[in-house]
Amino acid sequence: MMRSNFVSLHPYFKVHPGKLEAVKAGFPRFVEKTATEKGNLFYGFTISGDEFFCREGYESAEGLLAHLDNVGALLVETMKIGTSPESKFTAQRLSWKN
Image 1: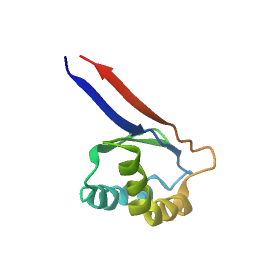
Image 2 (image 1 turned 45 degrees about the vertical axis):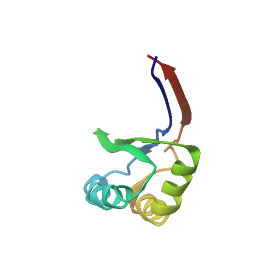
Image 3 (image 1 turned 90 degrees about the horizontal axis):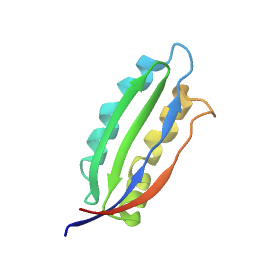
Image 4 (image 1 turned 120 degrees about the vertical axis):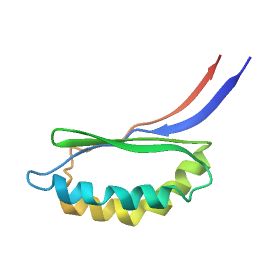
């Protein structure tokens, strides 16, 4: 029996009108910084209309917290460029057995 454990974060961001291209231009910087993180399992962006979603997973809560420290300044910069207070974050710890 295989058991998988990881922590995932699911932030959704609503982008101000006319700011999507500026926000998207910053995605590669997030990906580049995240690629250096030891505890990262997966990381990527999806865009739908005026919202974007980041799907990300980490080996542990410590990995997630290290990620937030690593990209914190970029996140603040991105939110200043054009995301709204309607943006939301959910985090969960996943565990399942195969």
